[in-house]
Image (cartoon, rainbow, N blue to C red; front, top):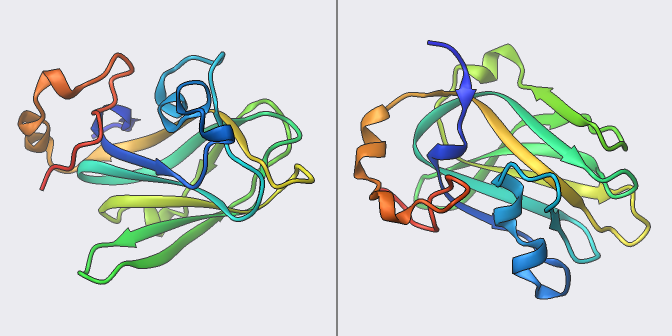
Length: 171
């Protein structure tokens, strides 16, 4: 089965901080809205992170992110947030971010592409910004969904204009 954008399969997303707590202008929903005029902008300090939960198990092949130059992540890592009753994070791989404005593709190692995941976290251990701020204009997970029937449980009214399901968890 070919790879596709997994954005419509996102059931929940969280970020570490939002600049001035202005979620409308700089909040997490701007990561997935396909609008390069909007962004997620963190407060200062490290680490910063983005966590995403999917409605169904997915296999992630790559991640696309566009940073603002001067506000990119350094020491960036992808974690699988394993659901075992006790919150655990397993390192999947480092993401080698460049400090520029271009859309960057981070291809997961071949052995990691076949693993089923429900929740992942991208952690920016440092920033190219002196104050530790991160600015991401867009983020997209590319891969495949393992259980398409889970989407039937999502009511169309809960899907926002960006196609992202509004903060609901499908169990």
